[in-house]
Image 1 (cartoon, rainbow, N blue to C red):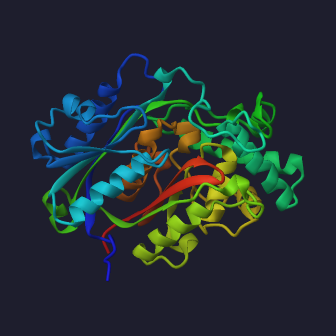
Image 2 (tube, rainbow, N blue to C red):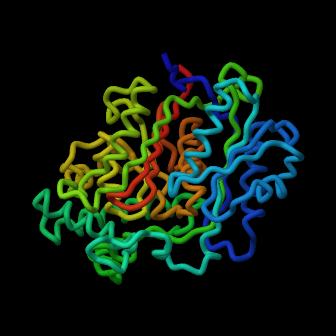
Image 3 (cartoon, rainbow, N blue to C red):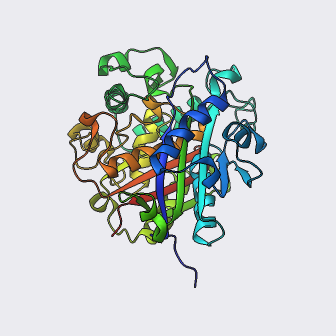
Length: 394
């Protein structure tokens, strides 16, 4: 019978670059910035690393990491799985450690999206829609999800747009207090409501920024973790799901839930032994590339009952002092979304929170023990999803 990953692998060091429009540096500088924070955090040197897994959308060969980090003739493996790439790199590296193949492994997630010249991801590589013919954009597809969600759950256009506006306000409030976030600016509900429309109902403040950044984790077997530190963090569960990509041609697909998120969450929860995620998780970092994405993701993860996201948002349940803080880092919306880095960066937030070491003490939760990361790649109806559960040792 297959074993789970629960408590077999520990994170003993992490680092994260400053996110933003980093015109003054190249991607090797971002990698070095994050990696040397992780080295110092774990108390190790580059020569101690046995192998490296890295995730990037735009950089294809291992030398892009081995070069700047001087990983002399060590195995370096690239993985890519759309916007879940950072978590996918961590997942693959964790399996290698759990299999006793390597003792100390580095995970690197990075991308430099500003240099691509696109405002957003563009529509390159997205297959044409059988009805729309000319293709579509990510904001357009998520806008369809938002309008369908409003209609399905009987929200007026005003109610629906105000609900997701409150999510953006929360994200910006959290990001404004995060020293490494890209968009460190508070906004009001009215500013979000009146912002230029990108694809109705999604306005400028409902869409995540195009960002440069990197994040790094150093992992080992849990039984070895105390060699590096006492306040290590354990991997409790890792779930991955890739859908057949037929949502937008299925007559029964309603755009109000993410199937792939549900399947990936089930796998991760089963490994971690989680029965009631809302009660057992202390915080969640979810893939909020758009404000509506956070709403549907939290429901699809089983943290909120489907159709009741508005109630949670109105009650402040996902705020720092709420029942289950969501995207305390600022999320992709405010922290930024360099595609290959985001999953590892979300893990950085959970790691720091569980250690009680959030960069700004005003952001620190009281005694958290377990957190979740969630990344989805693709578009509604054409998704992959990766879910990670991280916690303190039992």
